[in-house]
Image (cartoon, rainbow, N blue to C red):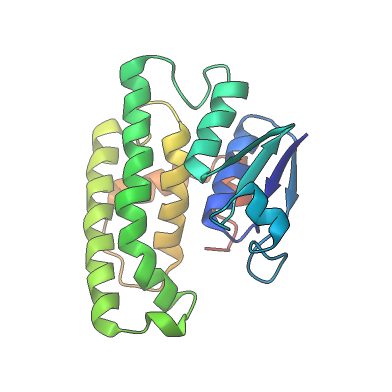
Amino acid sequence: MLRVMGRTDSINVRKVLWTANELDLAIEQENWGGAFASTKSAEFVDLNPNAMVPVLQDGEFTLWESNSIIRYLANRYGAGRLYPQAAQERARVDQWLDWQAADLNRAWSYSFMALVRRSPAHQDQQAVTASLCEWTRFMAVLDGQLARTGAYVAGQQFSLADIAVGLSVNRWFETPLQHPRLPAVADYYQRLSERPGFLRFGRNGTP
């Protein structure tokens, strides 16, 4: 049994749970962080010194960082599903995984915390506006990529990249902002909504 430690309203925990669902893996999920068990406890910090969710335990093996976890699950249990073996195809998946973590996530972080989480520490309106502009710019990049593939982020096949990016797309649509017309993104969102794992862990009403 795989153990995942982290609360289900965390986008990074949901990334792991959705991946496990796609791979038909049994998961024992425990709520840690936020209003649940403290990630600053000695037990948790011993597993992840960053005191952040998620943490995966697979027997005696412990791993943190959500993108590393989903890569591990696909490598160990996927048999080629979600994460192609061919070097160039895998590199394309990795490219969009890294883009989501390094560019897209950073763009939406401030405005999401302000508009959805209502964080008192994120109420600088200039910073909110700048975040929304960057978020929109990167969503336009995604729209162009999806228009080119006509299917999924890294190409014709659903992959780990779609799990990471798809959760960010859910946040885009669930955040109260003026959404520009991005037809390829809208079509992609509906395509993802045909997947049970996305309905359960992505488009479940909890941005």
